[in-house]
View 1 (cartoon, helix red, strand yellow):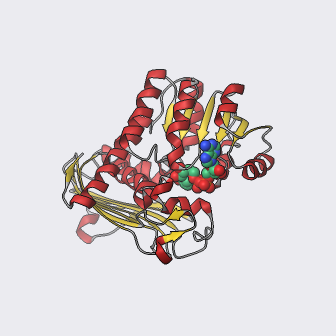
View 2 (cartoon, rainbow, N blue to C red):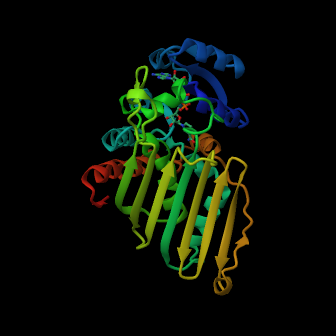
View 3 (spheres, helix red, strand yellow):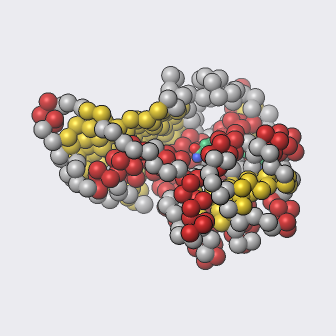
Length: 347
Ligand SMILES: NC(=O)c1ccc[n+]([C@@H]2O[C@H](COP(=O)([O-])OP(=O)(O)OC[C@H]3O[C@@H](n4cnc5c(N)ncnc54)[C@H](O)[C@@H]3O)[C@@H](O)[C@H]2O)c1
């Protein structure tokens, strides 16, 4: 696969460490509107062709697929252009800033017959995949209750850089720059983590969102800091279970932690993923009587990057595809309406 990298910021570096290890993948070009970032990135990863716009790269055309790692609001116009040019697309999450745009991208990709995948990175977490298998195999019985959280602390700590001065964090705090806050940024990850792990879909949602004051006048330079920083959500799942899902950028002491607990009539599971690693624990069968939890061994799973490369080679559409991401975006859009109207909505 001849791969074009679109957007050469923080996440692009992470993606390239994976793509560069996959046999059969050659990164043939990179695009960024910021010339300094583009040359530093292309030098670091030895990429020969460099473009200052996607249009230039499409006019050149010598690539099969692109990985779109631009800011959220850029995903829609650029992915639509890639699809129109007949290119396969891996797009970063969230697919778009709202459901109508995400649906338009989905329908265009399906009509063009290109491979389309959204980078819900936590599908790479082996304990999540094992948990889903156990749920589907009936090992937990009927699922009654689900708890899921995504905790970050970059508004408190400088471990990942300083949001007060760096554009990579500032655009995430500003609706005018296309961000739906923590809900749009990592909400899509934790909704997918919960629903995929519990092997069901969300069908009712009620959310509360909060934006804390972070700077004088709520503004830094061109960035109005008006996007939400924390959310709490109660949901109903299609399998009848009730769930609570929440996320915050103010979770002091947690750099990046996803936690999922699935409670069934015959057993329960807990998946935890942190930068230091992930784990799966279960309380199953007779252990329910003594509330004894045991670690469950898991085997590694292929990454989204490996599965995207395989899909381009085989022509078989991988999961999670654009349609799945669009459906999650619908839940996120409704969550924002529920905050305004203070009432539960059906998905
Ligand atoms: N899957 C994950 O776990 C994960 C993690 C982090 C970020 N992300 C996603 O990745 C995307 C990028 O995030 P980031 O942290 O790397 O942001 P970033 O701001 O560090 O990088 C984005 C880059 O895109 C460039 N850009 C902007 N407009 C462009 C255009 N029209 N054409 C080409 N390049 C353009 C910017 O100059 C910048 O270099 C976001 O959508 C984010 O949600 C996903």
